[in-house]
Image 1 (cartoon, helix red, strand yellow):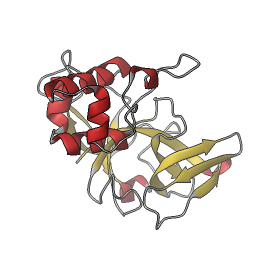
Image 2 (image 1 turned 45 degrees about the vertical axis):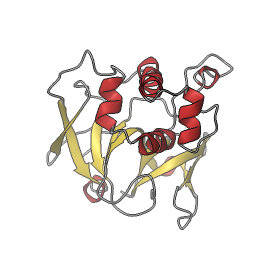
Image 3 (image 1 turned 60 degrees about the horizontal axis):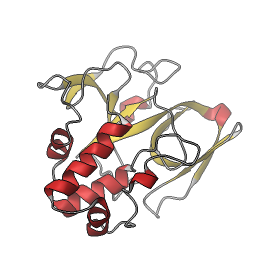
Image 4 (image 1 turned 90 degrees about the vertical axis):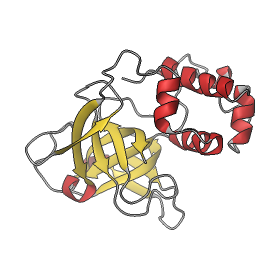
Length: 211
């Protein structure tokens, strides 16, 4: 699996290859100059922090770097299978139907396809094919996102949520309490959603997207 240290190391490696500091890399991507600084990698209470998927996407776009080069250049997958790994794949429409997930949001049942991704085999990850426009401009219709129900989610994370009624959505976690899950969309045409926790079947963190 991708670790905090590995992903930050990959960002450091990309900056070095471009002859930039991490602050310069952030500026080039149109981000706050401190976005990739060491001070942003650990929270005040000592918890490790991930860079956002959006910041990584902007960084790679401005640097003209592919995801494969970014991951391999940073040595993230040095210990994984060089032939990549196959994980279960399901479309959003199928994900809304019953029988494909267990109560924790992990793959179950029949009808799953497969996709290969550049990570070592791990039963906690699977792939969903995005449909709709609520995650534009970051995720487009047809993009494949890699998710894990086992990863801890925090405010600001990209997540996939399935309701008890079978609705599946990719959103940004704005707030989660005992009673409600508040979600925002990157696309301003889609309003925020507040979903009672009693209506949530499962929620899983988006690790990255294969675009």
